[in-house]
Length: 236
Image (cartoon, helix red, strand yellow):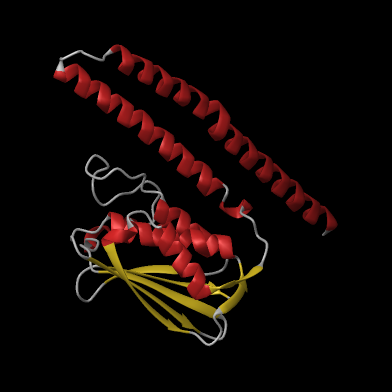
């Protein structure tokens, strides 16, 4: 039995070493040449000033876009690999105040009207606040980024059970087609082409992994009045 435990420990140490090597490769060995390519394209762009060949300029712009996208995707992979290494310290925070902070951190928040509904007895939680803030901010960013109306409505609801807080983020945007909804948590998957809307397609994957890491679960469903509904539970 003791020998079996030692073998398990050795396997865990080996896996941890592989993970550390992967993180190092992504953050150093692969990102360095990408940074070099970015610098070179910037220098070439300076040399191209005054050139009127639209085709050359368009192709060069496409090159810069693709290099930038590759770097963002690598950063997303790195972030995903570090989910289990987030700061796991427990600290007390106020849930409505945290949500208000998440709204403030949301890009282009002025485009949307936010609606809040809290059905909770205890507004203060002693939990993994940084992880929760990451999930909420990402879902709110998505609700705005993928919206198709000039006037946007985003609904944030929090309920409480004996063991969990239950969060719901709902919008009145275009929603997600039924035939692809099972793919939305896949790494780098996007409903629309990345050429139409620049995004890595990694946010939901990272959020889903964080929620699973803390023992929760996230689900997507279409809204009754068109739009998207993301629900997840967060253990107390």
